[in-house]
Length: 138
Image (cartoon, rainbow, N blue to C red; front, side):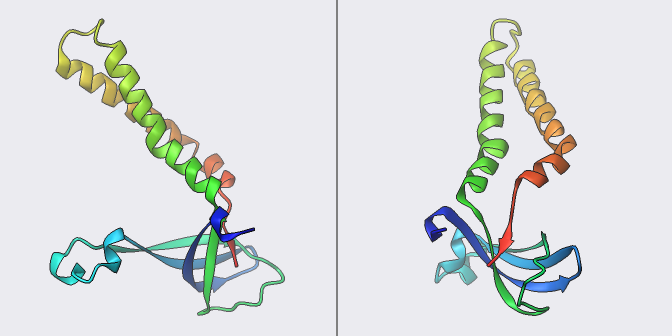
């Protein structure tokens, strides 16, 4: 698979057991490459822990630096689930409720409530969604 079709983050192997390999990755903001980041204070580096299925033929060990990869389509799917669909729900509710609810405040609260219900269902099905997103170590 070419690098154009992958999202790659480097990480450090923290633990390896029979079922899962735990990898710590550092996600940097867009500001992290800026030469003035120390003056600005806006750059953020966030450490994330990812548990990946252990490859029985793996040659890496605890402490090694590895690349954690996923398909670009998985990233696009995550963007749709977390940003595009909620925005569409918000806009549809605001526009459709304008003829039913006259007060703008109540209309806005109802639209935000609709998005909250969507995120609640995402939270309920988080286990099923986590099975759809595949990460692997390269």
